[in-house]
Length: 67
Image (tube, rainbow, N blue to C red; front, top):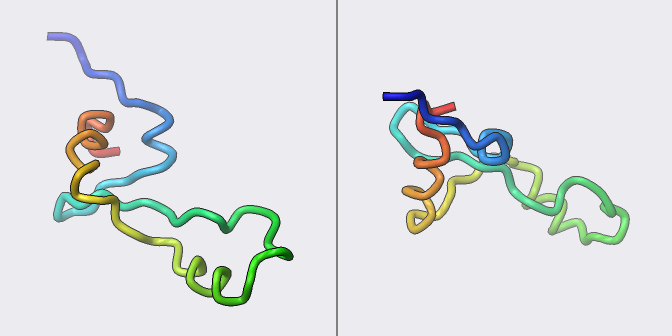
């Protein structure tokens, strides 16, 4: 049986934790920060978040080796 290919776009966006959850980074913290409110910037400061349960199985298929 051949090796499965990892989806490179998913590899850059998601990572799997030891317990099997899918970790992701929050959006809206890259550029145009001068136009955003203090609250938007503060809530985005903690970059770690978890992917939604409905998307979790799809993301795990894209990352067969847990990259």
